[in-house]
Image 1 (cartoon, rainbow, N blue to C red):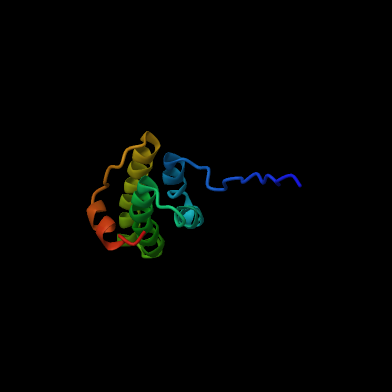
Image 2: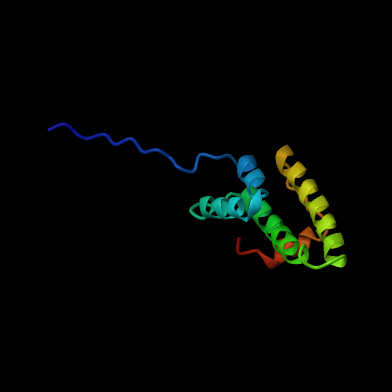
Length: 108
């Protein structure tokens, strides 16, 4: 009897930079990267998961508050763009207040 060979297809084929970029695009993209990052932690993906979680949450909450919330949302969008540019370059750089996000969400 001949041995059976099974081809294993690796589902998690995204590189670190792609995961970091995807984490920026909507909360659904963030969840996808979280699920992909769970079996084996990718340092860069984890870094941007922590950084973008607070941006998504703050933007979702403050965008509904008139005037002051809109100003905070504009700042949040600027930080989001800055973070996205760093992720696209493949660099792990903190946005302003990013060190707090890294500490608060260390579990990710």
